[in-house]
Image 1 (cartoon, rainbow, N blue to C red):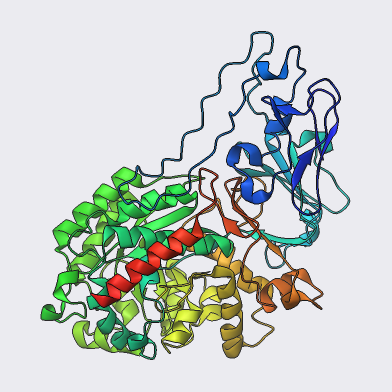
Image 2 (cartoon, rainbow, N blue to C red; image 1 turned 90 degrees about the vertical axis):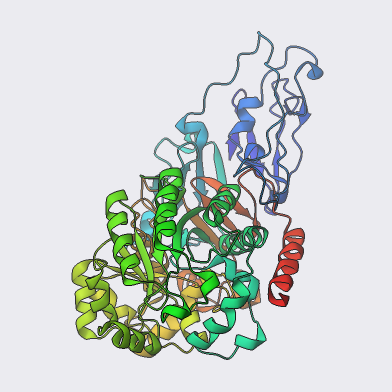
Length: 575
């Protein structure tokens, strides 16, 4: 419940999710800068009017006519632009607000009390396997000003400063709350080649050789649209941070990562964008066609540029850069080694595909005379800095070595099933000390960018190998949260703890799919949740009523996005 800052009258929420306010009774006449406080659905909210904390600040005693207070001052962000030439991540500017009359002092800067949001009385909160969920039985208090978690409210409790210490209360009684899910491996551009018949029934190497010529026609416009589609789909599945492995730089695509940075900022999500690379073409014994490979000098120079331009460090970082030579069969040994040296110098992470298929194992033995982990060590990659996509075919000794080295693995169950690559030994890897996270992988080998669905897939495929008791619902959720955060080298996300970033996903358990379910956390995983109802990134709502909104608060025009994306997908395949 929210109170008028002058009269102490309550502002209430309708059960339907609409927001409305009572007139405070102190002659303010329900005015917000001269406008009536009207019902507003979640889809109509912007960052300014979404936070109820701003309404009490604006509700004030009026000593003159209502029209003496400026009107029309609430910002209205434009729908997201899909023009790759648009300014990077620049939200639509808010309309200027004239200064108030001298008799009415400007509101004070937000304080923890006015910026605090209480997500009250959730069905359940996932705090991690083995952690007492009662610690947050009455919910979570978030400081939207700092974007961090202020407090966990235990059963029977209230915020430490009382109800009056929070500026907004969100009724979470129909929701399960989890840390924002974290995707550790993806190829955003591949949303353009989902479910393409020529590769629908092929294993990895045949799948790649048929798709490489298609992907070589990628354009800046197509990449912007593909990245937007992938990230919006991830957001709506409860994902707040995503790692992308972009290794395709055909002619005209030198600024590929720059384009992705723009999209990340427009959507208000977090991302680990890796500067991928391919330098070993078919004429030199590699798999990729020559038009998709680059010289090592170009790759390393661009890698340095991207880190110096975009990489953010420390808690709350939105954009980070990593180095990601594609795979042992598409880059030279020299590039693998030089990438590791540069990553050490610039203190960034390393990523590559490894041990995904038996074909890859055979390639490494034939070309290098080494198994994949031996090869990894030979080029200076076996350590805490590296996280590896797939890791399906490690043997016992390699699992031990990876754990001792502190390496991480991105488990991609759907892709591994789709391409018949095998089942990663996720439980043994984690038990050996390897950080195990989840990844949806490219949308041409998963055909979706849905991370909550991936949690269910991981649970089931790992139970086939290890049994139900070893792979619990809570453990699978931990892979998608704290395990994924560790794989990306982040300590500020992936957990619901005081001081961590307020990256949260809220899932409803209603509808036919959940009817008859009894326990919220198992229901979330076992009954097949598909979409989050609300998603918060750094204290700001990025999904409302199941629909992604941009960083400017404007809803994404999904119909326009889909139409433009479909057109580019058809063009790409048609050649």
